[in-house]
Image (tube, rainbow, N blue to C red; front, side, top):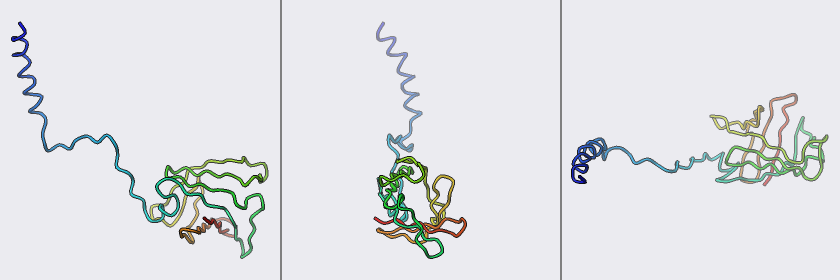
Length: 143
């Protein structure tokens, strides 16, 4: 009886194996890591980078408020921006904020939430972002 069941299963196994081809790629259990652009490497690296908010220049004057100086802006690889204040709250803002961020397709702007900031300068130690609003303020960050 066991022999009869084995004989019945053999054609099914042969058909199953015939459907497999060596040409088809093996399924991948993990996706390949994203290749970072040079701008992304500077902003967040493979994990995250913390930038200190140090100035807002508007009409050639630094107009940053004391409550915002040295706030930590943490740009995460996961496209989450965490803002932690320096211990002083500006107008009752939360001590911790979280926003989505991304880089424009041409890598000339950073999008934070619904706002777009033109990258004026970006090095390993300084980032300047300009917002297109009244007076076009430039936000300066240092590492």
